[in-house]
Length: 153
Image (cartoon, rainbow, N blue to C red; front, side, top):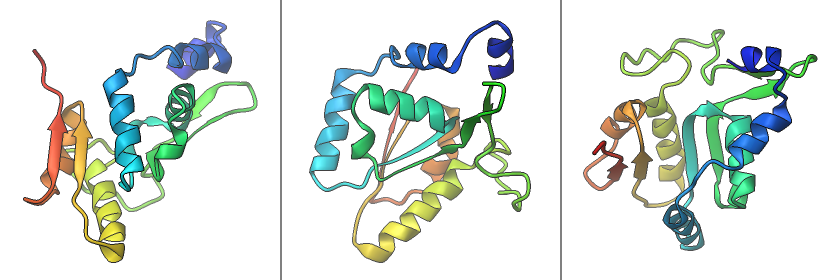
């Protein structure tokens, strides 16, 4: 898709300007700030890419609230085309999850985050998801954890 947009004359600046207008509910912004200011470690686990996420976070001045962003790496090539690579690269062992696409198993990422956090303190996980790609990580949580999922009306 990014190659096609480039062929149509769209630049990374065009894409970033569009992303900056992506709606983010004011209550979500308030929730992110409240959670971070309350001492929660916030992570983004997304099948988007680094350029899209960073652009949106900067537009809403939210970059500093997140400990880490786990997403597909992206960069501009020599021709100005945005190239998006898989989070789980093809030279790694396959993640083996039948619920997730080959490029990213959100469940394995959540497992890794939980293992790192468990080593440092007691905590619970609050997972917020908005699609079918969030089913796998929600299955990895415990009775003490929470899932907030979007539903279709």
